[in-house]
Structures are given as C-alpha cells and as structure tokens.
Image 1: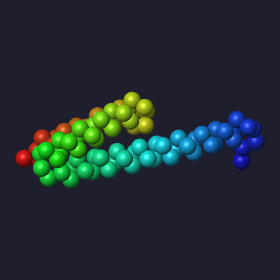
Image 2: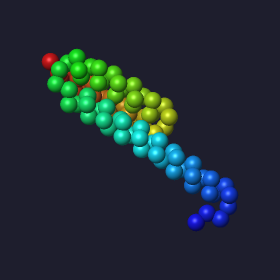
Image 3: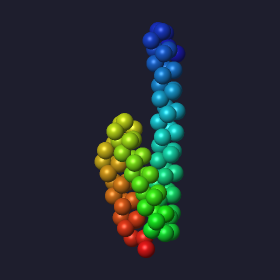
Length: 84
C-alpha cells in the first residue's frame, strides 16, 4: 500500500491510464477484425482506412510499438489487396 501522497496519486493516475489504453487496444482489435472479415473490396477499403488511422494514432501516442503497428498495417494491406 502507498505511504506517500504522491504514490497514492500515481496509483490513481495509473488506473485511469490503464482504462484508456485498454479501451484503445480493444477498439484496435475490433477495427482490424472488421477489416479482415470484409468480403467486398469496398467494405474492406473503408474498414482498412479506419484501422490504419487508429493504428497510426496508437503508435504516435506510444500505446503500441511502431514495428507492431507496421506489421499490422502490412498484413491489412495484403489482405485488402487480395479482395475482389
């Protein structure tokens, strides 16, 4: 348990950040999943744009590593390009 006022505040702020990060990563998984499950090229492209935008924002904020973001974007691009 925290003994100092600053340590108590750190616990509160860490909990808040954890919730924000968790929500953001959950949204990422949803967007990527919807892009992968798209059947048509037009649906895939719109889902792809949303997912890539979100990935870029997460990388910029440091929520995911830049190589992870690049890997996910590459896989999405590969999938969308295969759609007919």
